[in-house]
Image (cartoon, rainbow, N blue to C red; front, side):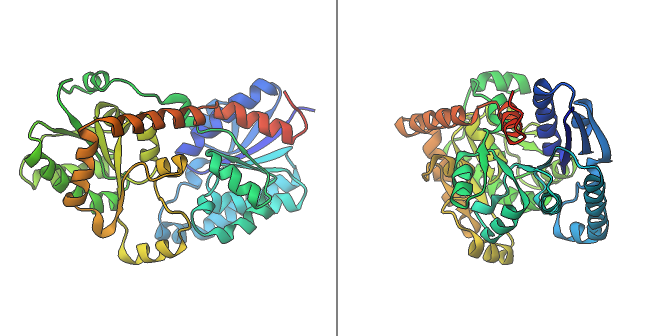
Length: 379
């Protein structure tokens, strides 16, 4: 019998992961059928969309609360349809608040479940591990330390590598500079204050103040500042227009090009730090939260570092700063250390290269192999 595979993706990144996984599974099982909550990439890969991915693309506490009745009805409908006509396996792609609930209900009824992209349960809110144990037959993890964490909790997990590591690699800064219209010579610092408006509001002012601090000491410096969308671009341009001129190139939708063009990167903690590591660019990581949010998060956090490069390298290889330490007087010297080069910079870049090789495993193919093994139908 041909395999029937249900998938639920909750946002754009999940749609990309799902499309690659579908393609890899189809290589192994050409007659398989795929259906569920899908975005455009998953539909192109052959997934029948029961619902659009837009149905789950809700961010922020207030927005989630507003849409909670609809989301609960949607989850109940998904479970009901899958229970009445069970698939061979259900694959929840990220979106843990939605998918773990679906997986728990399906697994109770004997349907095999896979969760792709581990929640950061290893970092904070570890009590969620009990819910995950009830929900999944297999957790597909992007990082090796996650697989070890699940093993210690007796939850089947498989480290499959990170999809970004399969596509990102370092290039000479001059190539990226020509691509985005920058003069190839001279030192460049990339400023990435985040992709959400709230992040940009908190981090853009100290990042620009740091740029001025650096210019006083290194007048030859130039800066490139990518934006994630029209809202953040407008905020960035308004902020720059209200201040004395800075040698800053605003680059809409160009975070990776900005990092590739830079000698060093100042950025908000998050996936961008992982991308900078994969591009082998030295960085300084900063983050600011609302004081109340920080007080709560710091009590729940169970790791010494909050940036992915340091977690992957298992050492404080790159500087991390939060809250009151996000100032020009602290960020500036940390950036100059990398700008000055030398053995410490070379050693960091070498570590980044090795880490990228550990993550570049062909995630979609590894995931498809793990799912095939779970189903007892190896390639």
